[in-house]
Structure formats: structure tokens, C-alpha cells
Length: 304
Ligand SMILES: Nc1nc2c(ncn2[C@@H]2O[C@H](COP(=O)(O)OP(=O)(O)OP(=O)(O)O)[C@@H](O)[C@H]2O)c(=O)[nH]1
Ligand SMILES: [Mg+2]
Image: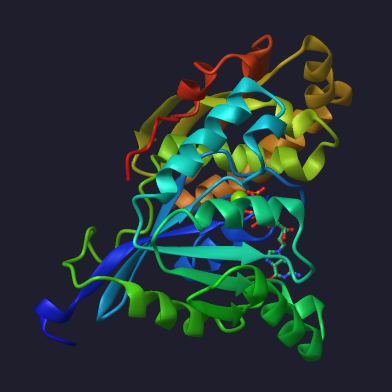
């Protein structure tokens, strides 16, 4: 272990368009599911911190919702989330820009144009390289470097874990000397209630189609330790319209039952105790049009 004065610590934001694998990368590095993931874009809604501590450094990762142009955000709630994400980038020590292993899209250009305005080291993490050939990888990296002068460029696979130690090494290189911000066993600042709501939302992404996962907000009402080994949790999945409620309940309750059973298993693993999950479905009419709704999911304007 190095002397305390040499210890490095700092904040690294993971940015990129929706679905590039930011949350997958965070989970892989932390070694626990701190952020939910799905094969569909715009899964992450909250800014999530995940902390990893090594002998010589501590990295506080900030997972962000996928960035798109604010004007293209479908609802006021989505716009608010984007504004906060863009604001948050300014306060960090290093930016990791994640990209798909394909040519730059207009969304990538939009994000990179924003990053040009901030004076922070930016690392390109070209993700999902398990999907392409090595020759393509090299061509893509130089093509990305032509558009933006990245401080470092690393091809990675968040899913398989490829080159993550190289990425971590490069991040640490750019961190300032600083004492740790969190205790060494700390992995996330997400309150357990939010984590539970998110695990339920992940199952909704898994089992429902089209607009449904985007139309729900999950709220945990009660979270009580009944005995040392049993926690009682009550939660409601709110939809925007009553027509969506029926889909979530399913034939004779089959859908809500499936979502409940599978999310309970994950919650139990995560909390390390048995859980009684009382899960209901309700309607919060047009919640996505009201920015105040974000408070229900513990969303506050983050000052990093
Ligand atoms: N093949 C492959 N798939 C990956 C890799 N990393 C992530 N994925 C997949 O990409 C999809 C999106 O991953 P997420 O981690 O949810 O993406 P995100 O960037 O957090 O997405 P938003 O929260 O919507 O912005 C999931 O299906 C992941 O399994 C990778 O290295 N290789
Ligand atoms: Mg995400």
C-alpha cells in the first residue's frame, strides 16, 4: 500500500448515447448491480454513483441517463433529466465517453460537441468490441479520434470485461491526489428504496413491450424490517394511463405476479434477507408531463 499522501480519488462520469452500455460497465467494475440495464434505450433515469476502491485510488463513477438533444426529449420529465445530466458533467475529474462499435451518430456528435466546451480529460471507451473484428476496431478508433481529441482511447467490452483494467488504470492516471471520499467498502449512494424500485423497473423492461416500461414510475411506500430475517416492502407501479394498467396486471394477474416474483428474488439477493413484496399497480395520470413526479423516485438536482 502506498503512503496516504499519494492516494488518488475523484469523480468519473460515464456519458454516451442511450444503450451504449454505461450501466453495464458500471456494474461490471463495481461487481454488483448498482444500475439496472436493458437492451432498450433510455433505461437509466437517475444519476447513479458507484464507488470502487483500490489500494492506491478510489474512483467514484457517475452513471448517467443516455444523452440526446434536449429538444428531442419526448416529455418534460425527460428534458429535466437531460438538463441535470449535462450540468453534472462539469464538476467531475474525468469523463469516460462510451461509444457503440460503429460510425459516429448525430447523438455522438452532439455529446462530443458539448464535451469540447469543458476542459476535462476525456477517455474514449469504444464498447461492445466483442461484436466486431480487431481490424474494424482500429479503424473505428482512429475515425473517432479524427472528430475529437481524446486523451486516451480504449476498446472495451463491458459485458465480457475486456480491457477494463486498462480503462481503470487510465482513469486513475488522470485523478488528482486526494483522500478517499467514501469508506473502502462503500459501493453506491443509492438508497435501498430506490434500488428496490429500480429492480422492479428492470423486470418491467424485461417483460413488457413498446411504451410500457417508459410509462411507469415505481414507488416504494413501506420498507420495514419485520424480523431480523424478513423485510416487508410495499410498492406500486404507476402507469400514465388506465389502459396500461391492465397490461401490467396481465391475464388473471399473471404479469404482475411474474414481475413480483422475479424482482423479489433479486431484492432478496441484494438485501441478503427474505422479502415479502406487496406489489400493486396504479395510475398517476400523465406523470411524465409533470417534473414534480421525479421527486417520487428520489430524483433531486445533483450537485456533484
Ligand atoms: N455485446 C455487448 N453488449 C453489451 C455490452 N455492454 C452492454 N451491452 C448491452 O447493451 C445493452 C444496453 O446496456 P445498458 O448498460 O443498459 O446501456 P446504457 O448505456 O446504460 O443505456 P441507457 O441507460 O438507456 O442510456 C444491454 O442489452 C447490454 O447487455 C458489450 O460490451 N457487448
Ligand atoms: Mg443506463
